[in-house]
Image (cartoon, rainbow, N blue to C red; front, side, top):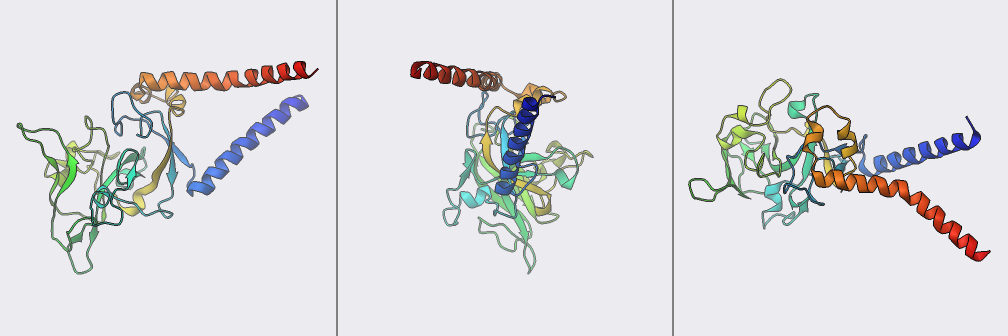
Length: 270
């Protein structure tokens, strides 16, 4: 191996290590980012910058570094977090393991959190519910029309088995009002999100939360999905593939452009 090639490999490895190390220091997690594999968080069919789309890279903040703001807290005018938004909607997006399992983590929005009251019953921050035996609450979260009437997402007669978050994806077609913990809306939980053992996902405990979604880096993660087993790549939109190709082409062409520009300047100076 020539000295020049060895130097280039050393520099490339050093840059990657420096980048990952910087992101680790910033986020407090390793790996510091995740690749979005499904369309459950999409806001439209083509995807958009600011929302979480398949093929995006998302930096993940350690939950010990930041308090999770739920959707109901961010939509409560009396709450300190009123108006807080993340990735195009109110509240934080969290990355969690389904029932604490070992399969692929989920990246979905935290709608509300049930907390056991020391005196009995349940509290829900961001609402007026304190010490209730069962949770009934209508969120300011529009759902599809039903029998000609519009309605908002409603939690009905939910008795949590433990403290935890209710979650859902932002995609209205695949998720939205069909929340992960579907039994909390009075429906059959087996039709909601299931874990690796085909059991309905329950409220997300704090210890199941891997991190909080932070900065989104669009398109780049699609390169990983291209080499992943089906159906991961099928969720990536044509727009994302096009933008990824343009990014790769720009990276490949940029050195030649810079070199040509420097050569031209050198010639002019001579």
